[in-house]
Every structure is written in structure tokens, then in C-alpha cells.
Amino acid sequence: MKKFLTVLLLLCVFIGHSQYTSPFNQKTIDSDSSGSYSFIVSGHFYGDGTNNSRFPANSLLANLDWMNNSNASMLVCLGDLFKDISNDRPTYQSSFFDQLNMPLVNTVGNHDLSGTVYQDNYGETGFLFEVNQDIHLVIDTEQDNGDVSGAQMERLKTIREQVKTGEINNVFIYTHRTVWSDAYDEMDGLFLDNTQGLTATNFKDQVVPVLREISAYSEVFWFSGSLGTAPSSFFYFEDQENKFKIIGTAIRALPRDAVLKVNVNQGKVAFETHSLTHQELLPLESYSVDFWQTEVGVEPFNWKLIVYYMQVALTHRFFWYGVLFALFSTFFFFYIRKIWQKREFTKVR
Image (cartoon, rainbow, N blue to C red; front, side):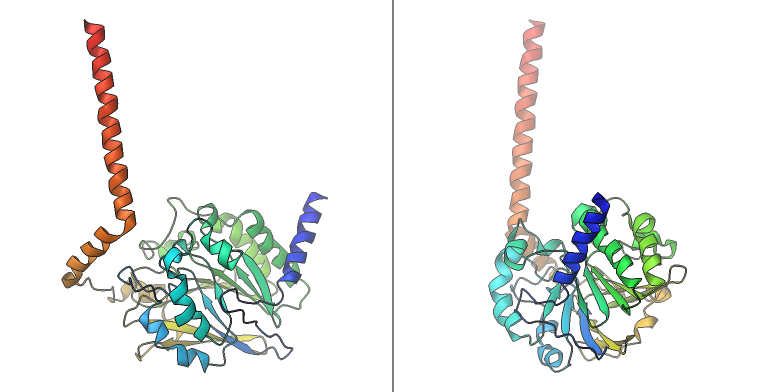
């Protein structure tokens, strides 16, 4: 009975989110019965750690006109929308959110969360909604160290039941972390520079079985946006056994910056890779495990920026939090040691 009520509640949640209105610019995705629409997806919109402007990545802002003229129904950010959410919101609002003529969806990353600032201003971090005959599921992988559990797992299981009606063409799943990377031996060593926990997630043991059941009825696409140091803004992998596709995409305010346009035509999905810096790109499927393993294109380290990196570190409040913690720990250690020595000296006397 309890399980039935849980499923019923989540079905109500699903219905309540059948139409998505962005909390960032209050624009709504308009659903229709044509079955055709498109959306743009990528991650890490703040760029990289050297961006202290409190604005999104320059490559992203430079392409606002292209995005607004793309006829896309929405823009999906795969996490790390902000670099410092506590301070960046006003400049993001005026320069990005207000200039975007489509709804923005965000899948929170570690940089998006600071206390309850995100939740207080933009609402829930895990949810789902429907566009035409497709389900879009946003998963907060900052919860539970990247595990998909609790209400988030129940949403996934709700989708499993929903697709059995035969009315859902595609299921698009969005996460920040590459929680799937530990499940495949061929990906070993490819995503070491990504946001991840100390241990493997429950993706292989608990998530994949549910995805396998969903893929028996609908196409399944899992997008993630934490690529770190990478040879490309794209990664593509097909789980042949379980019949779903994994896609990584993120920008870093670098020449390689690119976003993915997903076109859904009568339920069929096709991809367009779009460079933000006018570079030549391959089809998405070309950015495979083999490409990542053999491509030399690891981002070069600019030694001329060492002084700048030091300045950034020394002026960031987190650095000084660490210094204060270290000083306190050192003082506490010597204080305890002094008391202990005094106690031992008293015993000897």
C-alpha cells in the first residue's frame, strides 16, 4: 500500500510538471502535437576557474543571437551554471537570463549550490516534465554523493511505468556528474578531472536495470556536463547491451567550446554539433571512447598564467577559510600537546 501511494504521488508530480516554466526567465515550453521540436544542451556555463567576471563564459554570451535565432524550444545547462551563485546572480540575470528568448533548464552542479541560495531563488533541483511525447528528467547528482536514490530513483521508476503505455517516444535524462563513468571498463581514466565522489555510484547496479526496462519501450539519452580537462566539448557512448546512449557536453571558455543541438522530428532524434568559436567539428558520434583515448588534444597549460592563478587563489575567500582552519588546528594541536606534557610532567614529579 505504501509503495502504491508513493507511485501515485510521483505520478501526480509528473502531471504537475508536464509543462515547464523556467525559474530563471519565466518562459514556458509550449507543447504541441506535432512531435517536432529542438533544444540546445551543454554544461559548465561559467567557463573555467579563471573567470572572475561574475558573468557566464564569453563564448556563451557571444552566441546569444545564434541561440535566440535557432528556433530551439529550450536551453539545457548540465550544471555549473554559476561559478559563485551567492554573488553572480544579478549579472547573470541582466546579461544572460533576460536576454534569452527561450526557457532555461539547469541541472545543478557543485558550483550552483551554496546553502539554500539556489533552492530559495530557483526552486527544486530534481524534477521532470514532458514536451510533446518525450519525458525530460533532471537529476541532482550533488545529492547522495552521486547516487540516484530516494525520490530521484522513484521518479526514474515512475518513468519506467509511464513508457509502458506506448505514448512516450524518448526519455532525456540530465545530470551534472558523469555518474556512469565507473560502470564501463573502457572509460577507465577518461574522467579523472571531473566532479565525482570518492567511491563508485549506484549507476551500474541500480540505475542501469531501470534504464534497460525503459529502453525496451522508448529511446533513452543520458546527458552529463562535467567534463573537466578534455580533448573536446563532446563525448558519445552507446551501451549496446542495455540500449541507451550516454552523451557528455560542456564548455570551458576555450577555443574548443561547442554546444549540442538536439532535433526531435516526429519522435526521431538527431544531433547537430555547433561550435561557439567557428571551428570545424565532427558529428557527435565521432567523439567516442576511441577518440578520447587517442586524441592528443588535452588542454595545454599556460605557464604565463601562473602568477594570475596564484592571485586568484590568494584573493578567494575559500583560501583564507583554509588558512584560518589550518591556524586554528595548529593552535589546538599545540595547546593539547602542552596540556598533555604538563600532565605527564606532574605525574613524574
